[in-house]
Length: 338
Image (cartoon, rainbow, N blue to C red; front, side):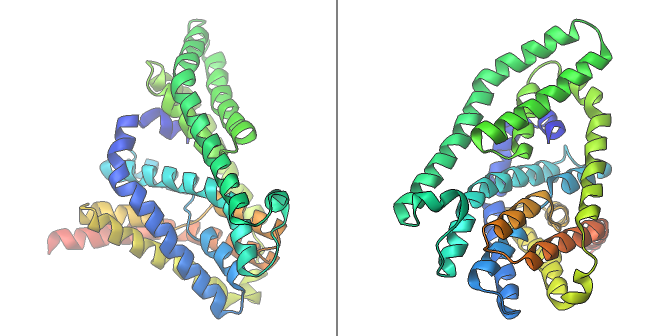
């Protein structure tokens, strides 16, 4: 996300909002309802189905960016909209991580545990929690755009003046991870969104190209670690224990999410090729789904089997994502030829 922020200007983000904002919110809603419906068919409670559905609704930043980079489409209109779409999903998930334990517990007629238990379950307590969360996110964004836009480029310029390639690479890494850590610890914002804003601020300076070049090997290493961690967490036994539920959940992500994203993109005036590219980009789930599934298990609003299913769905959808792009290219070529 730091690398994406380096190449993604605020103007481009504003231009993508007409598709990305309504698209992300509607697509997440559709995927959540589909996931809830699948869970209910297999005997889960409303609360468990609600959490499971949201886990299936948000795409992986790492997977989407790698796919767009390999295809050379990050700077295209479809690529910019897809990245903006993900930023909106990240913001929505920040709020969801606060509200989901409460909402799921209330759906099942239970008192929410964990971070909001002390605030009560009345509307006022939930509203205060939501306002505090949104206030923290807004404060972090303002801090980055006003203070960070002056401090970070100046600090990296001082490091760059030393003419040390290694020192500049280390400084860029510290900037990305430091801001991401600050965002998570002090403001409750996700690591991914913090790193994105860090890159976005630095991208407005003359050092953006140099920072992008110096951090490329590190970004590749972190991408590899992400895929390794997914494989390590996967429990193959879920394939035998709940094959039908797993297959239905995969279809929700690969077919349901893709169809919703394509329909929204076409409704907002995008071309067939652009809509298909966005649909294929979002036909997988990843890191935010793991975080929410873990929170759901901790808050006792999602069974441990649900977490195993989310990991299995993530691994399968990540594996078939290249095939989704191939199908999207074929469909776009067929549409252009007809």
